[in-house]
Length: 298
Length: 276
Image 1 (tube, rainbow over the protein chains, first blue to last red):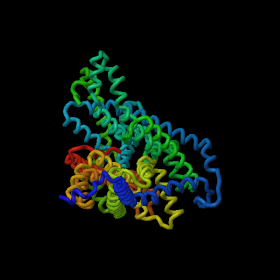
Image 2: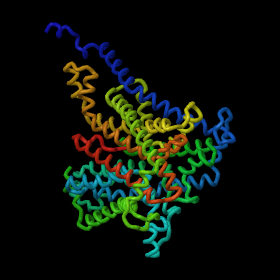
Image 3: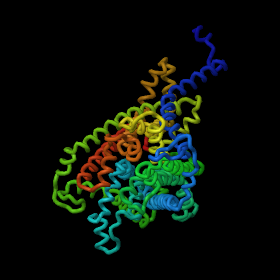
Image 4: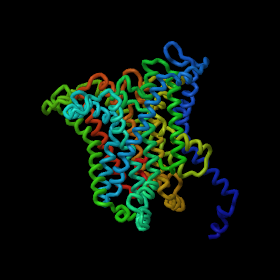
């Protein structure tokens, strides 16, 4: 017993406490170190390098030449063709986000407000399956539906409302909505399910109509879900590559394909780098707005 | 959480929500169902039913390029998942359980960036990095390096969320009972965060198996992965053989969904949802 009594308690000794804290800090650092190092080498440095290379001259094979600098590629961003592609991409990404929200909100609301937990979970699993399913495969499904022999085309011909849509902008748009809708539904579901329904009830008790209670209480409370879902749909659809490549034609090039082209047949790596940095910048701005406006939930 | 009271809708609102809800499910599932059905159609043209056949599956299995790509995909997914899971778990622990350390704030930002960066940008920068800066020639290994770089963050976020939901009293109790740090980690922390770790690993596996863009940028000549190979096939010509391999990929995704649901059901607190 005496030994225990003699031992200085850790709390009482500020120097020991500091030492322990410092040791703890080093432990944290060393645990993170392998991941830290990996991400610096295979993420941070490549990220910085691509910015540098967007100012590089282009060699005859299309590769960047270091040591010879130019602003040419950044000026090229203002060219009409580039502008058309950029505007089309931003517009489609924006429209896609809006439509996904319009379809996804009532859908997520419906699932989240089912009374039995079993029903809710069952419906949630039905959303999770397409969410986890291979994106390429899901896009391919639409390619066959929209082709000349596809079901959608047949229905359109039968009703006389539309023809073959494959390789047009509506086809790309349909593919984008289909591809990213689950990304909108899940965060919305999480937000609506965690909502404090007592507040909605309180509004109703205070004689708010159903619609007013929804508009003034439910909708604002589910805002984090709306913002998270919108970001999750907007960013990948802005950089979409598979969808426009499989469902679109020459007239529906989006930024994603345009960038890949620069590295492949376009043979202009520095310009590809410039476009990549630009799209990254747009994404950063969108994300910062998101973090400012809606909580920390990702 | 009295769901009953706050969500009492008028009958017609409820009816409308249900009808539109099932329509959305139809929209989500019909294209996939039709794709699967036509993988069994005995007609070269997808869209015209030609009677039931296993022909396209048979052809798929006997297509050496397809099987080679499948094997590459499995290899890349497995290796990158193992590394991403270990690295991501360590990062998650360092971020949640250690309050202050050198460069933590910067790391916190770096950790989230791969999740939100557009895939084209990531592919382009890795291509430039591998071919113009590092003396590495593109191969299956550059694909592995790329896949680890993006999936580690997802694992870290999920593990961190799991840790944030667990208070550290159990770990402290173990330490009070003279377990050293390693024993505490192995016997207390790791079992507690296991659902998160497995959820993260499954997500890393799915991301690796699904990736087209980054792989297309950093793949070497010859060694393609299944989605990129199939992507190339679709652009050339659509055949029911693609439906067959697509059905196979869907089946794999489904299995992964149910495994991950199993892990979530076993953990009481739901801190390991696929939140990203």
